[in-house]
Length: 82
Image (tube, rainbow, N blue to C red; front, side, top):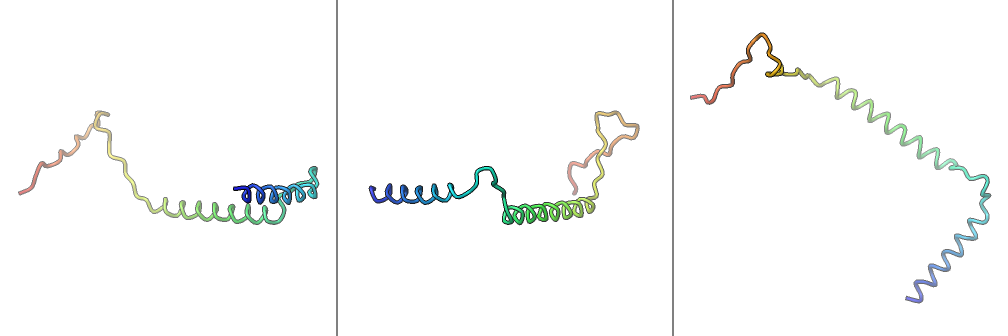
């Protein structure tokens, strides 16, 4: 176990020195952040386009509400066929 804490301590020391090199007043996402955002935006756009295409294919007619008291009586389902 002492070896584990020594390696963690060493890693934290290296990260701390790297953090001191970064200007705290000027931290930006950079090119990688832009690329990740652009890829996510393109993925969402593609998914929305696909969903729109699939929704146009849906043919849905709502059944009339039996409690609404419509003028035409609804057809009763048959119990069984022989």
